Length: 441
Image (tube, helix red, strand yellow):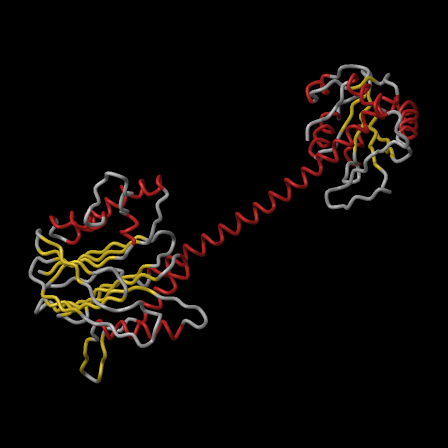
């Protein structure tokens, strides 16, 4: 708190308007942690030199009468004043002359300023120390006691507002620090949740003699509502799976982990096994979700395809998910649709399967609906041309000229980086992004 000293003209004007008040309405200054109490007297520390003891006693007696005996003055010297500063001291008056030893004044001023105590200096000279520390002139010792009393009253009155504002600021800072701590804790927990979720993703994509694969997975935040998997089911079959939990954040991410664990691939009996087909696998995931929901309803979209690398036949089932895309050479794209509702809603749903004959060089794309938000259609205005294909499909169309899945994913990563700047500027909604690109050899 800066040192507050009122110039004499200001004090005189204030006293003139206030001198008829009786009794003098002196505010009571309390510590921040204390409740106001009208009966509690104000404690003022009167700091003086030993040579001024008699004069100080006379002045404090006069000030006590003027302030209606609601002030207790504690007289001390500059040398001992620092020891007496505490939360019960509401103001400090420093009284010294040019002849006094003021060697300890600087330390005392530092301590008073540190404690934010309103202060008044009475002197018969323009002390260099005081002039350097104060923005206003100090009062002369020759001023009438009425002027000094009025100045003290003004300082204490102003201090009430200052202390109130300080308490409000302190409370706001405390709340802000608590909120920042909570935000940091939540960020740490989300970061950990993201690490756990990544454990359910393929650490390394498998290598196939009859195919090549690459993938893209971009969470919107720390965690994602998307999950994917690429599995070698046996030496001739590969499974491609993408699921998108409805919603965002931790609840959606937890749901993807349940989905990833609940996807069956093979049924082993003794020394033999059978590969579980896509429609049956989605039904198993659906039952797993329904069994774990309890009172809340969580559901997701999914697509699961199995490719026989010997025959190049793909069987695919879709649960409310975007269609699979087949890229035939560099000429055309085919959309593969399949009937079936969302998983996690009804327990009696059946998912049909589509069978597609693939050829060498064909690429299969499975993706989540986040691309629709990443590449939104421009708004339709009067006179504008409406494109037959959505914009994100036009972006996919650019992949036709790329033969390798890795090149397709790298191109899409670059386009998403470019588009993310546009999305941020326009405040368009965003979503998690997942894509699997598989090429049949």
